[in-house]
Length: 151
Image (cartoon, rainbow, N blue to C red):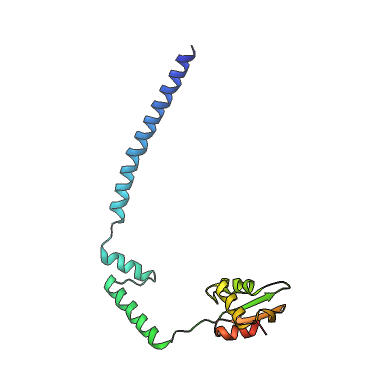
């Protein structure tokens, strides 16, 4: 009795799915065909409609020509401005020159923290590092950064 019940249920699901699929696909095709036929516009009609809505309609050639003109006029009028970044270096008790170098590497002020530390040691400045807050900026030279932090 159980197998017959299961077979009947499966057959009912199969029939319901088939009917739903037929209705869905047959009604969708008729509606889309009617919608496409009623909304088909010519190129002039589309352009006029968009222009009345406030859009600017250009061909690809017109667009590329206008962007080239804008780029050349911008490059002539405004010189490239270099952004200056200020970095606050907080030196706490027990920090070493390699710790300061790591902070400067994260801020992209120096390339290598170990090389920075070796340079500080070669200059004999490792004992001049005092706790405090130091502000350096990206427009400072390498020597100015060192002289600001290692007073």
